Amino acid sequence: MIDLHSHTYFSDGSSSPEELLALAGEVGLSALGITDHDDFTGYDHALRLPRPVGLELICGIEVTTRAAGQSVHLLGYFLSGEPGVAFRKWIHEGQLQRRDRNVRLVKKLQTLGIRIEFEEVEAVGRRMTGRPHFARVLMQKGYARSYEEAFDRYLGEDGVAFVKHEGPPIEEAIQQINDAGGVSSLAHPVRVRVPSVERFVAGLADKGLRAVEVQHSDHGALVQSEYRQIADKYGLAVTGGSDFHGTVKPHVKLGGAQVEDWVLERLRERFGG
Image (cartoon, rainbow, N blue to C red; front, side, top):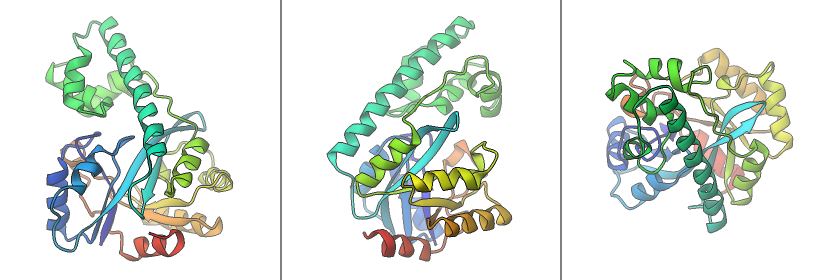
């Protein structure tokens, strides 16, 4: 069993790289993909750590992009090793844009009478501060009782303090990942709000998309079957993972998507690595 979608506390998860590797060993994974949001720090740290016997570490990332008038996540897998300097530079430029969004979000919260400073949110979020870290601070300060309330009232797209994180166009991100020798895969397509997921995926396939995340904690059996058929129809590979975040999403278990080893084997047969 493998899991190609997980997060450390270097993006919006709660686990350190050490804890994530240990848990992967406990649940018996043969391969783990660390796919932090717009950042490689969690993977870079994990790469230097001892691993449970039999566990392979896969270099990955989850890029925040723009498509169909909304934020859409794109996974990138580098099966032959780490991406090069050019791709990391492109990712760093995106990190600067995210930081600007966070500064604007702090200011908007302050105009609503919320006593919050950028430095305290950044201390919680480490390198890749995002809305879950804002939610945690809002909870600590008593402005929200849960992550759900923090997003519903303040941080979500319908919240009073929402500030959009633009991200690059998804076509640009696909090209950047592919040009860096990676495998671009549409993350959790069930979350993309479009009239037809099939038409959306077909358009991305024309732009170079290489895979679709079929197995995911949000995908039931019928949805998985639908997405597998779409992938087959448009000549795309499949990926899968739990989208593990630790205590941030306690209902999502590492390895819970039940992704079999052949998924990674097929990716390697098709794209090398």
